[in-house]
Length: 313
Image (cartoon, rainbow, N blue to C red; front, side, top):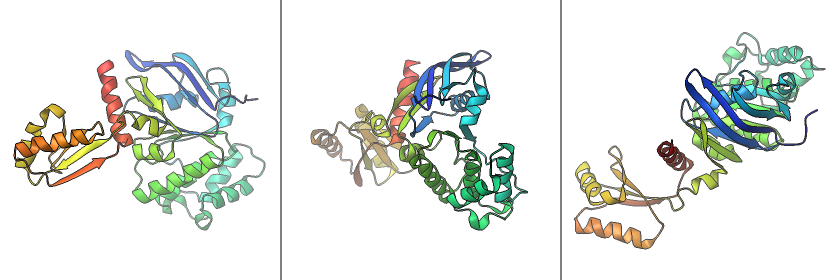
């Protein structure tokens, strides 16, 4: 029987493919009843972590436990404790939503497959579409059904590997609501995603994976604090003014967007700094069309952390 410790615990996890090191001794813990998001650039190793934790892949070193069970020595118990949803909905398009759920219930040998199917269809607001072939479902409906399939047997821990990839904004929002409701019901969730807004909205804790290591870990707010005072955004009337401003403010290392005619500069939050910037521009006779102060986003923090970690690697 599983212990009452963390839902997932990873210590010194390592994995290489040939001479390529994908995981270089990573550590993290997922608390029970929490949403933990693993972020990182393409190829950072997020899916490799998921595959190891769901017993689809064997680690080269380190220890990982899921629901208190060692993934290397207690694979059957791990698999009984989890569900896993990948980037593409794993539903049978020739079956109805109800038939998909009943089939999984029968394969998992649960006591009442039909009753479980009905309850899950109601929970995910799919009752009206229950007896239609899933080929007719929208992307969001198929994703909801896919997550529902993973809940047959009432697993304690849910792995969601980029679950909203390829979905339109409405379907993505629908999936976010589904994930939030699962977390509110006490499920432990490990989420990988390419959408930082998704992690910001859903995750209790986030780890950023870069070059096989955890570059940073914390709450969304804590990670955003790496840019504690946000940024100043200056927009100019045309490309000529933008270029002149870029030269005048070069010592402040602005990022430039030709498409929006803007310069963005990290700020220390002081009025004095803003005054100095405008004084420099005024002296050079550069006119600012618009000015805005931006609070740091998780996207800003993610890019800063990844760039800092590149410099350390």
